[in-house]
Amino acid sequence: MRNEVILSFVIADFDDISPDKITENIGITPVRIYIKGERKNPNLSGIAKRNRWIMGSGLDKYASFEDQMNAMLDIIESKIELLRPFCEKYYCEFSCAIFIRYDNDESTPSVHLDARYNRLTKELNIEFDVDLYCLPNKDE
Image 1 (cartoon, rainbow, N blue to C red):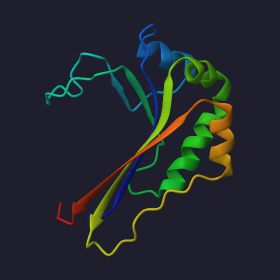
Image 2: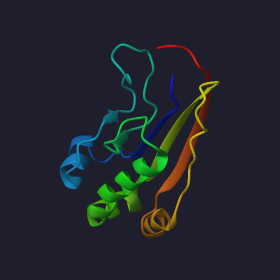
Image 3: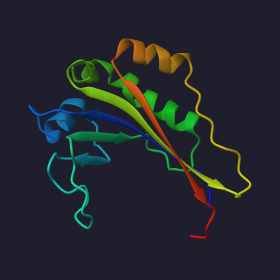
């Protein structure tokens, strides 16, 4: 199995607006929405602890972190004035999950935050969260 990088932009902790209204205001369709108190997935038992509107990069999970971040920045920079009020009022973050398969002969994925990222996060109040998962290399 290959290493995976899943990068998302998240708007969270909103209670005074619906996820549909966020989608309408920004003009981007999220990849996932969680509603506080509702099941995260109809087939699973996990309950969402907070409201979250989640946007993906548009690239697959095997694309490099750098490629995903650049794709994400392309989207966000084109919508910066629409996103600004959400970043000022709600918790916003880049959420990155990295799944490292040991013994798969791949290099560990790198995470590099460059000047472009730094300029954007200086302008908008966006945090960065990374979760690392080291997993055995098993066939799919």
